[in-house]
Length: 293
Image (tube, rainbow, N blue to C red):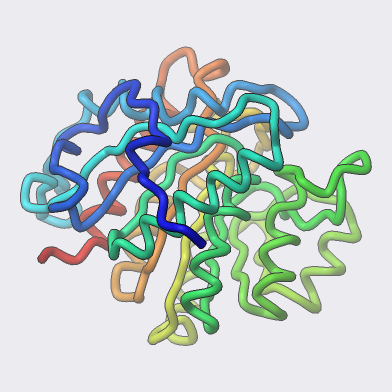
């Protein structure tokens, strides 16, 4: 595939705190994917990346958990990928192009959604580069449907599509508490799915993930809506904000090759606490997964 100039595909509505290093000098890159064309309940996640950037000034660059500081890391916020509104197929193609370019340029990617379907295109170049890739998936929903009302490109089908690309038992799903029966039957044969729980079962599988390239996809609705109401499809019974932060820290010894955080929606986030949690998770991801040059 031809090399693309990412700067020609970018709309820059704001910047994540401290993300002012040039792309050429950066070890890590933040890229917003403002797409929410297939959401099944409340729309608005295309504004998620901007909301995370806007509130990031309200958090410290220093992490008391890790005793590390963003100022010691070279990362840039490229802005948002400019997408043709409403055109799912073309948008997915552009997302895949951008993901491939970031990967080819040797940058650690932090992608901000947008709806969860974007993960399918984001992850395809990683599967090509890492045949033994493992995916760690945090979510309230299994996202393992074959279609949603006849449409196979949906945020409800994304992990089914990813699992089919990867092959059996290479996707690890945590916090799942919603889906249809067929999804859970599929998961028994094809993924490692944990109902409801997050941190303890994640810690239990860390030894088998050790030495494997790992891509993390985190749907903010894995967190209980009491802590994170700003999402399109809220699902009661989730983990706490503290637990999802600890989950990020638990994986810092793994070979993490990519990270996305999706489904933040400012439409239902009047207090902005969901965006603030997401901004904090981005900070912890940078400090946990990015290797300093």
